[in-house]
Amino acid sequence: MCGIVGGVTQRNVLGILVEGLKRLEYRGYDSAGVALVEPTGDLTIRKALGKVSELQKELADKPTRGNLGIAHTRWATHGKPSQANAHPHYSDHIAIVHNGIIENHEPLREQLSADGYEFITETDTEVIAHLLHKVYEQEQNLFSALQKTVAQLEGAYGLAVISSREPERIVAARSGSPLVIGIGIEENFLASDQMALRQVTDRFVYLEEGDMVDLRRETYSIVNRTGETVDRPITKIAEADEVVDKGHYRHFMQKEIFEQARVIGNTLQGRIGQHKVLEQVFGTSAADIFDQVQRVQIIACGTSYHSGLVCKYWLEDWAGIPCDIEVASEYRYRKVVVSPGTLFVTISQSGETADTLAALRLAKELNYLASLTICNVPNSSLARESDLVFMTQAGPEIGVASTKAFTTQLVSLQLLTIVLGRRHQLSAEREAELVEALHSLPSLCEEVLSLDPEVLEMSEHFSEKHHSLFLGRGPQYPVAMEGALKLKEISYIHAESYPAGELKHGPLALVDSDMPIVAVAPNNDLLEKLKSNLEEVQARGGMLFVFADKDAGFKNNGSTKVINLPHVPASLEPIIYTLPLQQLSYHVAVLKGTDVDQPRNLAKSVTVE
Ligand code: G6P
Image 1 (cartoon, helix red, strand yellow):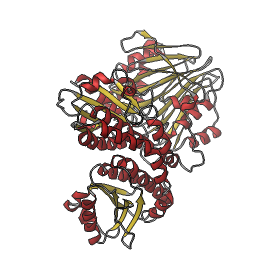
Image 2: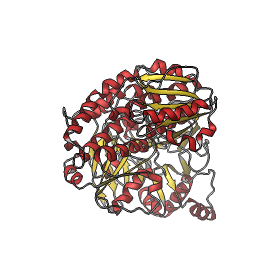
Image 3: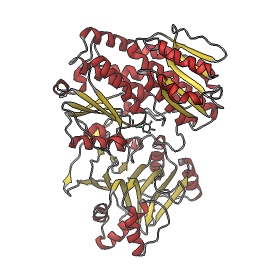
Image 4: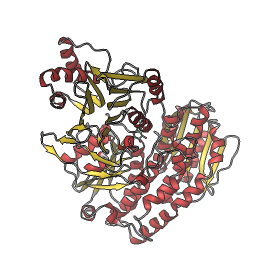
């Protein structure tokens, strides 16, 4: 999704901006651009459709330099991906980059056209550039002009602006889309994600909703939504927090799949004793809140939503606590009835997903007991705005298709289920069993991940296919959903998931030899039911690909390919069975030659609704 980088420096800022854009590439984008005020005082803009490497070629053809600049990676929302629609956009001496969506861009565009402004792009952002230019004519000050401009905008934005008339400052505003200041030595920077600036600083100031900043080389000042000058804390980020390279792996996604044993260990570390979960890890006020929980409402998007679906099975089965789960984009636009004692839980890798964040803000106005987020990015908006925070410790996830974030979310949700459950129907004996199982999880993950060569072989059956069906029962149904999502995200093969028991209510009509059917088959009390469903598939000539417990009794034959997994405790099945499904989609995508880490049209962090 869109990314912003900016800097005001003594040295040439261009290289820092381009490096920043490269560090944001993982978020998904379709074009990139940069605007600089050159030493001559001229404003120059360079843009390119496609990757940052295309922008670098453009910059090599038409070099530029300067001490003040802003840069952007765009993920199209208004107007197709093109060089013209790429940011920065400009109006005479003003250049601007924007993350988010301006909802009232049409009336503003009409008004500005009537005023004589000419639009050369289809974007909502160009409207802001011209509006700012118009206001500047009165104000003659970039900061107050931006203040008066944003007052007229409806929607969500992270904005950074420069002007060749004021070459000493970047002005920026945050509302609904994150921005962070990076503090250097006699130079300052701005970005939508601190990751973009790790090469120049480890000190960051996170802007709050409604904040505006006047960023200069040696100083900066922040004004809040009511116009008061405010201090925001400086956060120092440790070096070890970030190791962003592929190592010996071909893709980030592959690396992240194989990291799962280790990062699951990190998520558990310090959170469980030998036989119990240490509930203080949910925060000092957690115990008081958890004592009052009667019900849980989970909200999330994408892969994070699937981990929430698994948690519903756990909360209701193990803890006896009713749980509702909904995708954020539905929840936030309907009337909800909140039962007393309901804990509001958001799940998010990035902590910045616009719909999930909006749902949290809405929930704060409703009668929830408290909010808790399960999140992977410290200092993200969800982490800062929730009452309780539980970090997943997956480390930076770069592949757009989420892998290690999902399994560490499942582990975290299991810990949450246990601490809530012990106040309800979960006995100390059961807790001890669950915790002992968790201790064995990292090594079980290693064992299952080592089946990679078998999964690779299986993937060859998929690369020429156009459709596929993923089946599971019980908590393995959301696992099948996640398996199908992975396959469609990165291999572009249409993949649908179904609870196996629903097969004969529709999808069975699709089954033929061209439609691979993937089944998740641990050896649990639903196995026999699942087997009958799979027989229905075979009877219709369908080809089965089964990830099964080694004792589940599946045999390889002409119409069934089986990968045997070790027997694992039922509480770990959703985590363990996810791993080979991730490997399957990875290998299919590699065989098909798609852009595994940055699949077309998708973004890592969806900061617009
Ligand atoms: C995007 C990503 C998915 C992710 C979803 C929710 O669609 O491509 O991988 O699951 O957003 O993101 P979150 O950061 O809230 O987990």
